[in-house]
Amino acid sequence: MNIHDKAHELARALKESPEFQDLQKKRLMVETNPDSKKLLDDFHRKQVELQTAQLSGRTITPEQKKEYENLAGIANLNPPVRDYLAAEMQLIRIMEDIQKILSEALAIG
Image 1: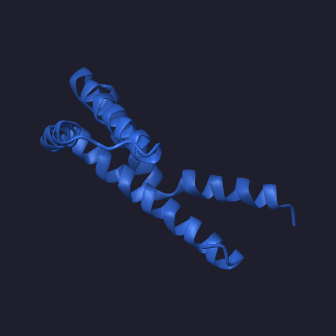
Image 2 (image 1 turned 120 degrees about the horizontal axis):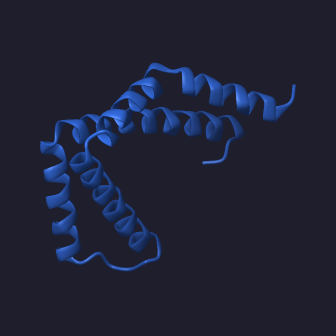
């Protein structure tokens, strides 16, 4: 058994999963709407900015937090973006489950 072959097999299974297929459909809906695409890009950019700040030990200011929350609220009011983010979370949960299974099997974590 080649471990890399198994990893590729898992990747193919993920790509064929209903969750990934749904995410792809939702991504297309966002990308065909310029306003939705800009909103999603802005939301992801702000999300990465705050995560980077946290990981580097910087304090997130109340203004930054409020800006993120406002952007999240606006994203939630945009059906294509809201649906995309929900589909993205579904796939992230699967990836987290897989990571947990691997960590537990290897007793690391």
